[in-house]
Length: 115
Image (cartoon, rainbow, N blue to C red; front, side, top):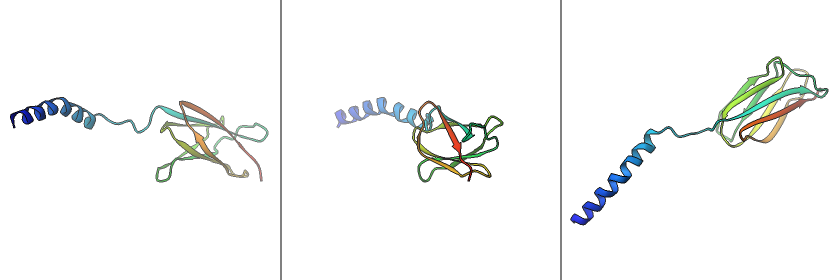
């Protein structure tokens, strides 16, 4: 009995700090990944104020942004997964880009076509 108690005490002495540390340390749900999007028309003209939204795996939140005067927007603090990107602007067809992989600082050019 004493040998078992000693072994359990020894195990707790080594494992308990690890368990406590794991519980108190914030887990990284997303890395420092970002997706920069640049929206243009078929002639290369930038489209400011275009709506861009990003959808991850089912059940995750949809993130929305509006392009700036240079037709650009950035989604930051993303998880390492595939996303679906949508871009829309009045007078243009909504563009859907499936399976957009984000790794590091990823850039994506989106070309909107007129009706």
